[in-house]
Image 1 (tube, rainbow, N blue to C red):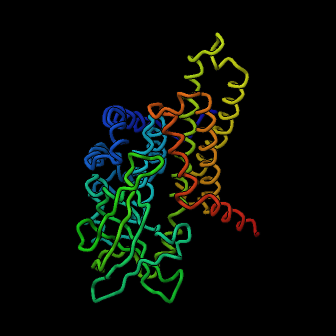
Image 2: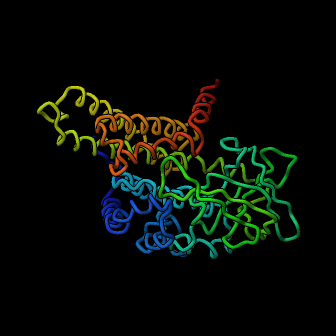
Image 3: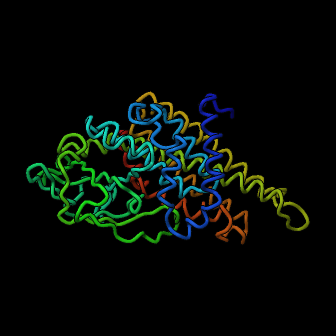
Length: 382
Protein backbone atom coordinates (compact mmCIF):
# COMPACT_ATOMS: atom_id res chain seq x y z
CA UNK A 1 0.00 0.00 0.00
CA UNK A 2 1.28 3.46 -0.94
CA UNK A 3 2.23 5.45 2.15
CA UNK A 4 1.11 9.09 2.18
CA UNK A 5 2.53 10.00 5.59
CA UNK A 6 5.72 11.68 4.42
CA UNK A 7 6.55 14.62 2.18
CA UNK A 8 9.79 15.48 0.35
CA UNK A 9 11.34 17.06 3.46
CA UNK A 10 10.91 13.81 5.35
CA UNK A 11 12.35 11.74 2.52
CA UNK A 12 15.39 14.04 2.33
CA UNK A 13 15.83 13.53 6.09
CA UNK A 14 15.53 9.76 5.60
CA UNK A 15 18.20 9.74 2.89
CA UNK A 16 20.53 11.80 5.06
CA UNK A 17 20.05 9.57 8.11
CA UNK A 18 20.52 6.46 6.00
CA UNK A 19 23.88 7.81 4.84
CA UNK A 20 24.81 8.60 8.45
CA UNK A 21 24.07 5.03 9.51
CA UNK A 22 26.01 3.57 6.59
CA UNK A 23 29.07 5.67 7.34
CA UNK A 24 29.09 6.12 11.10
CA UNK A 25 27.21 3.18 12.63
CA UNK A 26 26.95 0.03 10.50
CA UNK A 27 30.73 -0.51 10.07
CA UNK A 28 31.26 -0.44 13.86
CA UNK A 29 28.07 -1.95 15.21
CA UNK A 30 29.44 -5.49 15.61
CA UNK A 31 32.19 -4.16 17.87
CA UNK A 32 29.71 -2.15 19.92
CA UNK A 33 27.59 -5.27 20.32
CA UNK A 34 30.64 -6.94 21.85
CA UNK A 35 31.47 -3.88 23.95
CA UNK A 36 27.94 -3.58 25.29
CA UNK A 37 27.83 0.17 24.60
CA UNK A 38 28.18 2.73 21.83
CA UNK A 39 30.76 5.52 22.18
CA UNK A 40 29.48 8.73 23.75
CA UNK A 41 30.97 10.62 20.82
CA UNK A 42 28.44 9.04 18.48
CA UNK A 43 25.66 11.08 20.07
CA UNK A 44 27.58 14.27 19.33
CA UNK A 45 28.09 13.12 15.75
CA UNK A 46 24.34 12.49 15.39
CA UNK A 47 23.62 15.87 16.95
CA UNK A 48 25.97 17.64 14.55
CA UNK A 49 23.99 16.24 11.62
CA UNK A 50 20.63 17.23 13.12
CA UNK A 51 19.42 13.79 14.17
CA UNK A 52 18.94 14.59 17.86
CA UNK A 53 16.42 16.87 19.52
CA UNK A 54 14.65 17.77 16.30
CA UNK A 55 11.75 19.20 18.32
CA UNK A 56 14.00 21.53 20.33
CA UNK A 57 13.18 25.14 19.39
CA UNK A 58 15.68 26.89 17.15
CA UNK A 59 16.46 29.40 19.91
CA UNK A 60 18.05 26.53 21.88
CA UNK A 61 19.93 24.92 19.01
CA UNK A 62 17.31 22.55 17.63
CA UNK A 63 15.41 22.42 14.37
CA UNK A 64 12.08 23.43 15.88
CA UNK A 65 10.49 20.44 14.13
CA UNK A 66 7.88 19.09 16.53
CA UNK A 67 6.84 16.43 14.04
CA UNK A 68 7.02 12.79 15.12
CA UNK A 69 7.40 11.68 11.50
CA UNK A 70 11.11 12.53 11.77
CA UNK A 71 11.36 10.33 14.88
CA UNK A 72 9.58 7.55 13.02
CA UNK A 73 12.11 7.71 10.19
CA UNK A 74 14.98 7.24 12.63
CA UNK A 75 13.33 4.14 14.12
CA UNK A 76 12.61 2.68 10.70
CA UNK A 77 16.07 3.23 9.31
CA UNK A 78 17.86 1.82 12.36
CA UNK A 79 15.83 -1.38 12.06
CA UNK A 80 16.33 -1.59 8.30
CA UNK A 81 20.11 -1.31 8.79
CA UNK A 82 20.12 -3.99 11.50
CA UNK A 83 21.35 -1.60 14.21
CA UNK A 84 18.30 -1.57 16.44
CA UNK A 85 20.26 -1.59 19.69
CA UNK A 86 22.01 1.64 18.64
CA UNK A 87 18.64 3.06 17.63
CA UNK A 88 17.17 2.33 21.05
CA UNK A 89 19.52 4.81 22.70
CA UNK A 90 18.66 7.50 20.16
CA UNK A 91 14.90 6.99 20.35
CA UNK A 92 15.11 7.01 24.14
CA UNK A 93 16.83 10.40 23.93
CA UNK A 94 14.50 11.88 21.27
CA UNK A 95 11.14 10.21 21.79
CA UNK A 96 10.98 9.49 25.49
CA UNK A 97 13.20 11.87 27.45
CA UNK A 98 13.07 15.05 25.38
CA UNK A 99 9.29 15.59 25.79
CA UNK A 100 9.76 15.98 29.56
CA UNK A 101 12.36 18.71 29.06
CA UNK A 102 10.22 20.50 26.47
CA UNK A 103 7.03 20.37 28.51
CA UNK A 104 8.19 20.92 32.08
CA UNK A 105 11.42 22.94 32.03
CA UNK A 106 11.34 26.56 33.11
CA UNK A 107 13.30 29.11 31.10
CA UNK A 108 16.51 28.74 33.10
CA UNK A 109 16.40 24.95 32.72
CA UNK A 110 15.78 25.25 29.00
CA UNK A 111 18.86 27.41 28.61
CA UNK A 112 20.95 24.99 30.69
CA UNK A 113 19.93 21.72 29.07
CA UNK A 114 18.24 21.99 25.69
CA UNK A 115 21.29 23.10 23.65
CA UNK A 116 23.33 20.14 24.90
CA UNK A 117 20.44 17.71 24.33
CA UNK A 118 20.13 18.86 20.72
CA UNK A 119 23.90 18.77 20.20
CA UNK A 120 24.32 15.32 21.72
CA UNK A 121 26.76 16.56 24.34
CA UNK A 122 24.17 15.95 27.08
CA UNK A 123 22.84 12.40 26.78
CA UNK A 124 19.57 11.70 28.54
CA UNK A 125 17.92 8.82 30.38
CA UNK A 126 14.80 8.34 32.46
CA UNK A 127 14.83 6.28 35.65
CA UNK A 128 11.44 4.91 36.62
CA UNK A 129 11.94 1.17 37.13
CA UNK A 130 13.14 -0.07 40.50
CA UNK A 131 14.03 -3.54 41.77
CA UNK A 132 10.54 -3.79 43.30
CA UNK A 133 8.60 -1.42 40.99
CA UNK A 134 8.23 -1.99 37.27
CA UNK A 135 4.96 -1.36 35.47
CA UNK A 136 3.37 -0.13 38.73
CA UNK A 137 4.82 3.38 38.77
CA UNK A 138 2.86 4.35 41.86
CA UNK A 139 5.00 1.84 43.81
CA UNK A 140 8.19 3.89 43.33
CA UNK A 141 10.16 3.89 46.59
CA UNK A 142 13.21 6.07 45.78
CA UNK A 143 12.71 8.97 48.14
CA UNK A 144 13.65 12.64 48.09
CA UNK A 145 13.37 14.72 51.22
CA UNK A 146 13.41 18.50 51.06
CA UNK A 147 16.19 20.34 52.85
CA UNK A 148 16.10 24.05 52.08
CA UNK A 149 16.84 24.61 48.40
CA UNK A 150 17.82 20.97 47.84
CA UNK A 151 16.34 17.50 47.72
CA UNK A 152 18.28 14.64 49.29
CA UNK A 153 17.72 11.51 47.18
CA UNK A 154 18.13 7.90 48.35
CA UNK A 155 17.20 4.76 46.46
CA UNK A 156 17.97 2.58 43.47
CA UNK A 157 16.82 2.16 39.89
CA UNK A 158 17.39 -0.70 37.47
CA UNK A 159 17.15 -1.55 33.75
CA UNK A 160 17.91 2.07 32.84
CA UNK A 161 18.45 2.60 29.11
CA UNK A 162 21.45 4.89 28.39
CA UNK A 163 22.32 4.35 32.04
CA UNK A 164 26.10 4.37 31.53
CA UNK A 165 26.31 7.14 28.94
CA UNK A 166 23.68 9.48 30.37
CA UNK A 167 24.58 12.96 31.62
CA UNK A 168 21.03 13.94 32.63
CA UNK A 169 18.79 11.35 34.29
CA UNK A 170 15.13 12.15 34.91
CA UNK A 171 14.50 10.32 38.18
CA UNK A 172 11.03 9.51 39.50
CA UNK A 173 11.20 10.04 43.26
CA UNK A 174 8.76 9.96 46.14
CA UNK A 175 8.54 13.35 47.82
CA UNK A 176 5.47 12.55 49.91
CA UNK A 177 5.15 9.13 51.53
CA UNK A 178 1.57 9.76 52.58
CA UNK A 179 0.28 9.74 49.00
CA UNK A 180 0.52 6.97 46.41
CA UNK A 181 0.04 8.84 43.14
CA UNK A 182 0.30 12.43 44.33
CA UNK A 183 3.58 11.85 46.13
CA UNK A 184 5.81 11.48 43.05
CA UNK A 185 8.06 14.17 41.57
CA UNK A 186 10.64 14.30 38.78
CA UNK A 187 14.21 15.40 39.48
CA UNK A 188 17.07 15.72 36.99
CA UNK A 189 20.17 14.09 38.45
CA UNK A 190 23.35 15.14 36.67
CA UNK A 191 26.55 13.25 35.99
CA UNK A 192 29.07 13.84 38.76
CA UNK A 193 26.65 14.60 41.59
CA UNK A 194 28.09 13.20 44.81
CA UNK A 195 26.40 9.96 45.86
CA UNK A 196 25.10 9.19 42.36
CA UNK A 197 26.64 5.90 41.28
CA UNK A 198 26.24 3.69 38.23
CA UNK A 199 26.34 -0.04 38.75
CA UNK A 200 27.28 -2.63 36.19
CA UNK A 201 26.36 -2.42 32.53
CA UNK A 202 23.79 -5.22 32.60
CA UNK A 203 24.47 -8.39 30.60
CA UNK A 204 21.27 -8.73 28.59
CA UNK A 205 19.91 -11.45 26.31
CA UNK A 206 19.68 -8.96 23.43
CA UNK A 207 20.06 -5.25 22.62
CA UNK A 208 23.75 -5.71 23.37
CA UNK A 209 25.08 -2.39 22.03
CA UNK A 210 22.62 -0.50 24.22
CA UNK A 211 23.98 0.33 27.67
CA UNK A 212 21.48 -0.64 30.35
CA UNK A 213 22.49 0.01 33.94
CA UNK A 214 21.64 -0.10 37.60
CA UNK A 215 21.73 3.31 39.29
CA UNK A 216 22.06 4.07 42.99
CA UNK A 217 21.48 7.28 44.92
CA UNK A 218 22.97 7.75 48.38
CA UNK A 219 22.28 11.11 50.00
CA UNK A 220 22.46 12.78 46.57
CA UNK A 221 21.87 16.50 46.95
CA UNK A 222 19.84 17.72 43.98
CA UNK A 223 19.13 21.46 43.73
CA UNK A 224 15.52 22.59 43.71
CA UNK A 225 16.40 24.12 40.35
CA UNK A 226 16.65 20.56 38.96
CA UNK A 227 13.02 19.68 39.61
CA UNK A 228 10.86 19.33 36.50
CA UNK A 229 7.50 21.02 36.97
CA UNK A 230 5.67 20.97 40.27
CA UNK A 231 6.35 18.87 43.33
CA UNK A 232 3.91 15.99 43.57
CA UNK A 233 2.90 16.19 39.91
CA UNK A 234 5.32 13.53 38.66
CA UNK A 235 2.81 10.71 38.25
CA UNK A 236 0.63 12.85 36.00
CA UNK A 237 3.65 13.90 33.96
CA UNK A 238 4.68 10.27 33.47
CA UNK A 239 1.19 9.24 32.43
CA UNK A 240 0.88 12.07 29.92
CA UNK A 241 4.15 11.13 28.20
CA UNK A 242 3.70 7.35 28.14
CA UNK A 243 1.55 7.27 24.96
CA UNK A 244 4.43 8.72 22.90
CA UNK A 245 6.88 6.28 24.51
CA UNK A 246 4.63 3.35 23.69
CA UNK A 247 4.09 4.53 20.13
CA UNK A 248 7.87 4.79 19.71
CA UNK A 249 8.27 1.17 20.83
CA UNK A 250 5.43 0.02 18.57
CA UNK A 251 6.84 1.85 15.56
CA UNK A 252 10.24 0.24 16.05
CA UNK A 253 8.50 -3.14 16.35
CA UNK A 254 6.77 -2.82 13.00
CA UNK A 255 9.99 -1.56 11.38
CA UNK A 256 11.88 -4.54 12.82
CA UNK A 257 9.28 -6.92 11.38
CA UNK A 258 9.51 -5.25 7.97
CA UNK A 259 13.30 -5.51 8.01
CA UNK A 260 13.16 -9.20 8.99
CA UNK A 261 10.75 -9.95 6.16
CA UNK A 262 12.99 -8.23 3.61
CA UNK A 263 16.14 -10.07 4.78
CA UNK A 264 14.22 -13.35 4.64
CA UNK A 265 12.73 -12.68 1.21
CA UNK A 266 16.24 -12.12 -0.16
CA UNK A 267 17.67 -15.17 1.59
CA UNK A 268 15.02 -17.67 0.50
CA UNK A 269 15.30 -16.42 -3.06
CA UNK A 270 19.01 -17.32 -3.10
CA UNK A 271 19.19 -20.39 -0.83
CA UNK A 272 18.37 -23.72 -2.49
CA UNK A 273 17.14 -27.05 -1.16
CA UNK A 274 16.24 -30.16 -3.15
CA UNK A 275 17.46 -28.41 -6.28
CA UNK A 276 15.26 -25.30 -6.09
CA UNK A 277 15.11 -21.99 -4.19
CA UNK A 278 13.54 -22.24 -0.74
CA UNK A 279 11.28 -19.38 -1.72
CA UNK A 280 9.64 -21.50 -4.41
CA UNK A 281 8.08 -23.84 -1.83
CA UNK A 282 4.47 -23.14 -0.98
CA UNK A 283 5.22 -23.10 2.75
CA UNK A 284 7.74 -20.29 2.28
CA UNK A 285 5.42 -18.26 0.07
CA UNK A 286 2.52 -18.64 2.47
CA UNK A 287 4.68 -17.71 5.46
CA UNK A 288 5.97 -14.55 3.77
CA UNK A 289 2.49 -13.68 2.54
CA UNK A 290 1.04 -13.97 6.04
CA UNK A 291 3.81 -11.96 7.67
CA UNK A 292 3.73 -9.28 4.98
CA UNK A 293 -0.04 -8.94 5.31
CA UNK A 294 0.04 -8.61 9.10
CA UNK A 295 2.88 -6.12 8.98
CA UNK A 296 1.17 -3.96 6.36
CA UNK A 297 -1.96 -3.79 8.50
CA UNK A 298 0.12 -2.81 11.54
CA UNK A 299 1.96 -0.19 9.49
CA UNK A 300 -1.31 1.53 8.56
CA UNK A 301 -2.34 1.68 12.22
CA UNK A 302 1.04 3.07 13.28
CA UNK A 303 0.90 5.77 10.61
CA UNK A 304 -2.56 6.77 11.85
CA UNK A 305 -1.27 6.90 15.41
CA UNK A 306 1.61 9.15 14.33
CA UNK A 307 -0.86 11.51 12.70
CA UNK A 308 -2.91 11.50 15.90
CA UNK A 309 0.17 12.20 18.03
CA UNK A 310 1.10 15.15 15.82
CA UNK A 311 -2.46 16.45 16.22
CA UNK A 312 -2.28 15.90 20.00
CA UNK A 313 -5.19 13.44 19.85
CA UNK A 314 -3.43 10.10 20.46
CA UNK A 315 -5.18 8.35 23.33
CA UNK A 316 -3.57 6.18 25.98
CA UNK A 317 -5.77 3.31 24.78
CA UNK A 318 -4.67 3.54 21.15
CA UNK A 319 -1.02 3.79 22.21
CA UNK A 320 -1.49 0.68 24.36
CA UNK A 321 -3.08 -1.18 21.43
CA UNK A 322 -0.16 -0.19 19.21
CA UNK A 323 2.44 -1.20 21.77
CA UNK A 324 1.13 -4.66 22.62
CA UNK A 325 0.00 -5.65 19.14
CA UNK A 326 3.08 -4.47 17.27
CA UNK A 327 5.61 -5.93 19.69
CA UNK A 328 3.79 -9.28 19.65
CA UNK A 329 3.90 -9.06 15.86
CA UNK A 330 7.62 -8.28 16.00
CA UNK A 331 8.22 -11.42 18.07
CA UNK A 332 6.16 -13.66 15.79
CA UNK A 333 7.70 -12.36 12.60
CA UNK A 334 11.32 -12.52 13.71
CA UNK A 335 10.78 -16.06 14.99
CA UNK A 336 9.17 -17.28 11.76
CA UNK A 337 11.81 -15.56 9.65
CA UNK A 338 14.61 -17.15 11.67
CA UNK A 339 13.04 -20.55 11.02
CA UNK A 340 13.20 -19.94 7.27
CA UNK A 341 16.93 -19.22 7.59
CA UNK A 342 17.45 -22.66 9.10
CA UNK A 343 20.64 -23.17 11.07
CA UNK A 344 22.16 -19.99 9.68
CA UNK A 345 19.42 -18.00 11.38
CA UNK A 346 20.83 -19.09 14.73
CA UNK A 347 24.26 -17.66 13.94
CA UNK A 348 24.84 -14.28 15.54
CA UNK A 349 26.52 -12.81 12.46
CA UNK A 350 23.19 -12.89 10.66
CA UNK A 351 20.98 -9.83 11.32
CA UNK A 352 17.93 -12.03 11.77
CA UNK A 353 19.52 -13.67 14.82
CA UNK A 354 20.11 -10.29 16.48
CA UNK A 355 16.62 -9.12 15.54
CA UNK A 356 15.15 -12.25 17.15
CA UNK A 357 16.89 -11.80 20.51
CA UNK A 358 16.41 -8.02 20.45
CA UNK A 359 12.67 -8.44 19.96
CA UNK A 360 11.99 -10.29 23.19
CA UNK A 361 12.32 -7.36 25.58
CA UNK A 362 9.93 -5.13 23.65
CA UNK A 363 6.98 -7.00 25.16
CA UNK A 364 8.31 -6.06 28.62
CA UNK A 365 9.68 -2.51 28.61
CA UNK A 366 7.54 0.58 28.25
CA UNK A 367 4.88 -1.25 30.27
CA UNK A 368 4.46 -5.01 30.01
CA UNK A 369 2.00 -6.12 27.34
CA UNK A 370 -0.29 -7.51 30.02
CA UNK A 371 -0.61 -3.96 31.39
CA UNK A 372 -1.35 -2.69 27.87
CA UNK A 373 -4.23 -5.15 27.59
CA UNK A 374 -5.48 -4.04 31.00
CA UNK A 375 -5.56 -0.42 29.78
CA UNK A 376 -7.48 -1.45 26.67
CA UNK A 377 -9.86 -3.64 28.66
CA UNK A 378 -10.68 -0.85 31.10
CA UNK A 379 -11.35 1.52 28.20
CA UNK A 380 -14.12 -0.91 27.18
CA UNK A 381 -15.76 -0.46 30.56
CA UNK A 382 -14.68 -3.83 31.87
